[in-house]
Length: 235
Image (cartoon, rainbow, N blue to C red; front, top):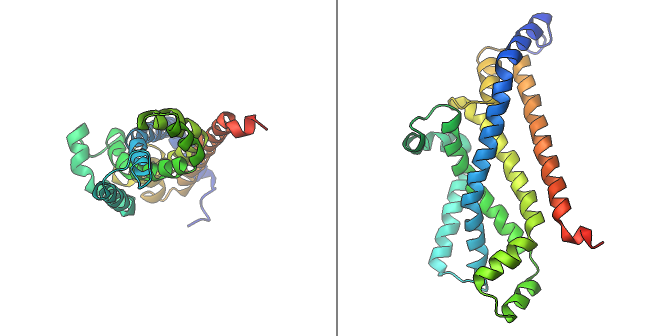
């Protein structure tokens, strides 16, 4: 299986695919990852905030039944394997984008898989905020909305960026798996050529590009989080 990966013939075939497919596949992977992560944050950020502020002792306590329901829904969605979730999301993808195959259609299951994960990451970031700062804001008469928008979120920005970067790299991994059901990008190239046609060098090159993308996302996220961390500025 592996003894013929680096033969001249394999390199020639790989180069032809690189020229014809890889640039578009790289763009599709980047596009799907960023767009899916954006919508996952749009859905997951308010959910994560509710989980913290709505808790007992939070700045805006919610009824226990509501909070329990939110936790159950998030935990259920997080527990479904992504491949199964993609299949289950077919009707919703068809309803939203009109098809279940292709780059745009793969965004729907990616968002469904990612937003509960983002909600938990946001919850974790907000719980790191010093409770003394929140108590000080409450003592000065700040409303729950003001505490959320002017205290909790600003104080947790570095942690939020770090966690969103984790979500971004996770979605990138999911996007590669979406190639199994017809999603575009590098995952589709790796599966169509590397798995179905036994051209393992092409699959290896696609994996290398995915690793490079992860490194780029992680480096940018880490640098941005470090730059915005007030604790490091005060040292």
